[in-house]
Image 1 (tube, rainbow, N blue to C red):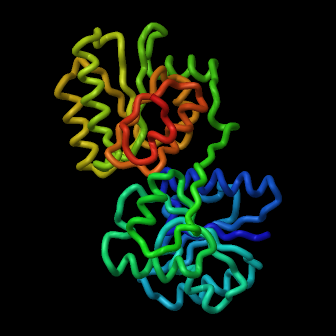
Image 2 (spheres, helix red, strand yellow; image 1 turned 90 degrees about the vertical axis):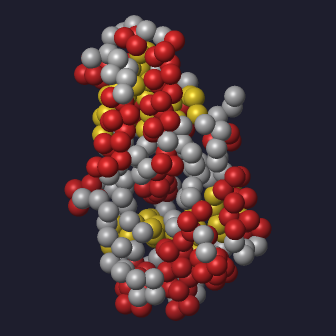
Image 3 (tube, one colour; image 1 turned 30 degrees about the horizontal axis):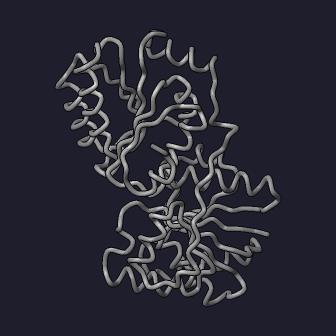
Length: 310
């Protein structure tokens, strides 16, 4: 079987991590995979060269651009694609249009979004209804996202299936040697408690909540005995806002690590993982931290209560 995993772009984030993990393990099972970006790659060519499957950008610029659909059809014919696995609403629509010309190619979709953006307007819901009619299954990582999609869209309930997203246990596991090395690099003493938070700096990921929570902890605990490391990035304005927030209590040590490719090398150094989003579809970073044997504190939103047991 040949599968094309189609998404808007492969910009860094949870969706990309889920897609790359899925394709890597499908390849091990003998399922041949291709990666496709409707728009641009969203990452450097050097990053793309390290992906487990070949990647192609179709350079689509508008919602109904016929030339991009033609390029997609020609690609699928040339490469013998049997199934398109779309990972967002726009890719699902493109694949549904593809099926008008090549009905032998099957279609499934994974709904990753934590925001209601994909179903915000009646136009969005009509688009989703049309695309879902040509889709064999719609996969969600949590029951919460399943119920959300059903409540917002015109789709048969028997098409919705909940499959929690997987992670690569070859990457995420306890590592005592790596723990010691990373803590030395950060200047963290063996007796210090290192708390970790991961996410982009948009409001929905709640990194500001993590910083405020850490500052509250410093009220009741010696600030010198604890440290917060924030892994992720955002716009210049978002980064400045969070740094200003952290600077309000300089005695509370917050280290901004920025975006890192090798987050699996940071998790073993952490003692407690703090995840405080305002919206979260699944929380892949939670399962990654759990695989590294970290205790977790998280907000009760979205799919998180299906992962974290209180």
